[in-house]
Length: 113
Length: 112
Image (cartoon, rainbow over all chains, first blue to last red; front, side, top):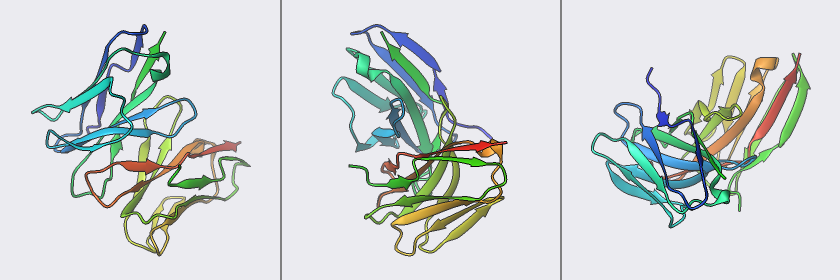
């Protein structure tokens, strides 16, 4: 069965640079979520989209933005990167009638140097 | 503030032993999910429980949702080294479009 696809798997950027993470949800899923997981931490919710509209917003810095496109894939844009942005970034997708049952991608490991 | 508290944080046992992991909250959740995560990988969904008092079994894993939908437990029978991993519980709020609230996880190590 198709899963959530994230790219790239690994990304190394310098401070103050910009990064773009991509997420392709499971086919027919209409909701996409972005989470950030620091070392030894639980996943922290950043933002979600339902039918291409922002549906919920968490602790996403103003330097980050995200959108969901007409084909339901989503991109997380991160600017003015800081060392503290180094983390695993997960995308998850779900179908609206399935009780927030979310399926996660393998994640993007972002390292800011 | 952590909405979901998991215990224990670490668990190290021998192969063949039984164990229970707890996930507690003072908040009511519409659903609760259990995930297992390997280092550097995404959480893998194990089960979703939605009805108070619900019990679901997945081979040697038994999941229970509390009657008041505020807590859950995961019981593993005859643990195997392949069960080693980080177990995360996550609660869904009232909106199916909203976020999941994660516990900090239980790191389970099963020794052969």
